[in-house]
Image (cartoon, rainbow, N blue to C red; front, side, top):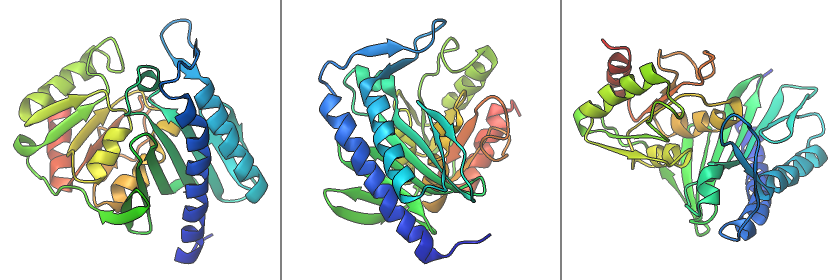
Length: 270
């Protein structure tokens, strides 16, 4: 089954309604002393009312407008659909940032067609930075104005601005992955940390050049793929396979194919 540009543009308008509904739940709770619940007894995996209510608001809109569409959400799981379309929702990506008052958390919204992400939104409500990728273009929205944006074009590691959420071996990386990241960081111009999915928006806007992560889940990366690819960037796992091909949740996003290839070699120890 195929879709046309007009159809996906219509879905993009609806996705912006989802974004606005999520903003209505997250923004009033940000820096407002939201109660934090730990979802994981073995480690700190926080969730707040903002996460849950934002996802509820988005799911309600989808269920009303597109009852045949599937839904995958971080907080409330999977609702099977009856056709090729499925929404993937991460209402607050970067809940640790949210509970620390740092405006680097985002809402992630993806639309998949037969399992392939074809539309993605990365939205930071507090700064009003929103990136929407589909149909061969990624647009940066702020203050009611939208403009096309592109990845930087940087091709050399020595010129690259690198990011990851947490490079320590006791966080998202195991010891081997942390060592691989450290090798890569030594080759790049500068490294910046703790920006979660916001970093991928910066890459699409040309402000970062390279991002390396592990332990991402489906709701963490589905929206990233259309935003990065439609801005001219590359995003795969560490072996150059589609994101989600491995069980380690790896992503390697780069501004150009040449930079991506160079980073893969370093990560592999070549």
